[in-house]
Image (tube, rainbow, N blue to C red; front, side, top):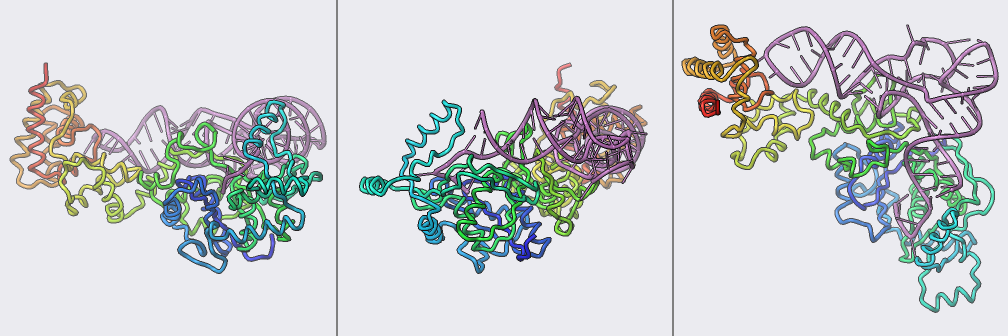
Length: 492
RNA sequence: GCCCCCAUCGUCUAGAGGCCUAGGACACCGGCCUUUCAAGCCGGCAACAGCGAUUCGAAUUCGCUUGGGGGCGCCA
């Protein structure tokens, strides 16, 4: 450990949606910062003008906010080390690159993309490792002048040492060693004047006084270059920790074909931020041998790099679903209603009258509270409470070990008894229907099953009497009549 | 192809030489509860990749093999 104050950063590039793998990296950085009482900085790495997507910054920031990952410095927050958009720091990078050239640690390269492409193809043919052949390292003054005269725009390349070994101590992987001879000269400044990730992140991490770089494992092999860059620039490098990757179900890099991959999609699918946070934290980190559910504060208190593991983890949606269910059930009824309402409003068929009655909704939702794994399931679970007519096959009305005739009789008798009821409460319904089953020579389950289908149009639903109570007398009677008709019309 | 990293149930993981006939969770399969579903409870299935070495003793240490992942862009 250095004795520098803890300052970590999340440095997304605004090229698309916030990938859950990326967000997991953000989360670990945030947890690390909060655990140590350090700073969490967000820096936008918008140095690829071609790939930058409008609105992406907002989406990424929105994802962080949704999860409650607050940042101390960055867009919207300001800070003493800004600007926090790399596109606004171009001068700084140009200056750094200029210094490296003067020092002899970097050089202009005029090789065209075309030549580089051909070079790589040739290397592939020869089964040689691909990499820049350093041709422009030894350009004479005349050759250089010639290129300039032709108006060629150079890139700046880093002169990586040709021999020796670069070794460093990764906080998670411990000693990692690379042979310098195998590492080529990376581009520092592109021909459009923008820096590459390598230069920009090194310069900014230094300037922003980042103490620990926690990033995904895919960066492990470029770390030697970064280390040499720090050295050439005269900076003291931060400590590095390369986090395990997040993989899809087939063990390949998590991508769209594995399903939802953007944090925004999970939000839209009705996952709760607390569940998402908890789940993501457990991908590559664990507290002990049994704890699964942890609050944000518990996560902060117990998060350490020592307990981050080295193995890539598969993003397991099944377990996320279970965990989300746990969090949903832990919600108070009113919180559940408040959170589910927008999903209901959006998910119910268009013919359902809007606005939805708050009072009615508040009576319906408790019935499915413990049955929902995501908020997005709520409309499907409750639509029969809202729609006018039910759609189901008449056969569904016929319960186990019953036939058309006995079902018809059960329906007609029930209808008569229900019509005769003065009240229509849960207990009253049970008091009427349970004895009726006996009277009809049916098991309670058989009668209730018939009525459940008649009233909800489905075989799986919330408890019958509660459902009927909420649905109300008029609606229930109407549906029983419809069920009778439907059964009569059914072909024998 | 070259370089780097990794390797415990299907999945997420516990395990830092004897506590391990390897623990927990998801999923799955039974059972209980029960008007269906869900929830809950009880039980079950299921793993130390292989081979050598070190050691009285190895999932834990070392080596090799195999397997998986990542990197090798004027992307990040």
